[in-house]
Image 1: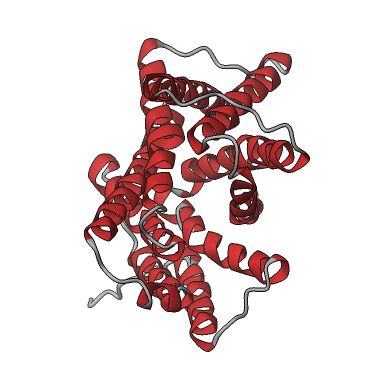
Image 2: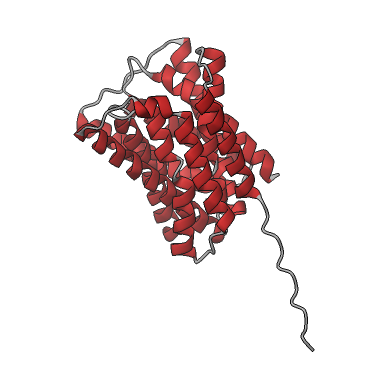
Length: 298
């Protein structure tokens, strides 16, 4: 079951980039994000109410959902949105992939979970692999104050994503399932981002085209309702550090889709990077060898 959820998350989130690209145009990105999570929240609430699986939550759980909505469905998306204006997408992907290491560190700090050496080694190997994958893009980008700002925003977005993982893990330890917490978290996140748009004077427009509405539907259903539920379920089952290795595999799937749709051509460094990412995946999911029993000296 875990491997199915893992592959589902990687395949869905590895293909949402093209839907996000098709969102660009008439509607402001911030507004598109509001539409995405507001609609996803409505779908989740409808499913939960019809199936009578909406869990009642106390005030503490609602406050955690509010924080989760702010971190996972609001601030991190805004950070990556603005970071992409000054930093190449490849570099943003590399920064985001450090979520594996941040999740391992945060799980150690907040939940006193022991960080397995193979998880850290696998995460580092995957990060190195992404460096090879995006080397032409990274090498051709000169440093500037805007680059530093963009990197800072990308890192802040990654930390917000990791914080959202920790909050979801906390909710699941308390017995609240991702379907219920995601519904509330997406609703809170969309509401806060809508308030930001209103305060900033950003118009709530709709582009009535097949491309925009179709991509929005993809982001709402597979991208949000299924993707976030599958991923955060993995966070609860596998631990935040292993689940976050998905972030290393997303760019690999995206590049393969790009090769089919946009004519991306694989290079020797990119293939080396792909091999390193796959080796990192093997390390992350390798079960540590059991310790051999000590022999008695008697």
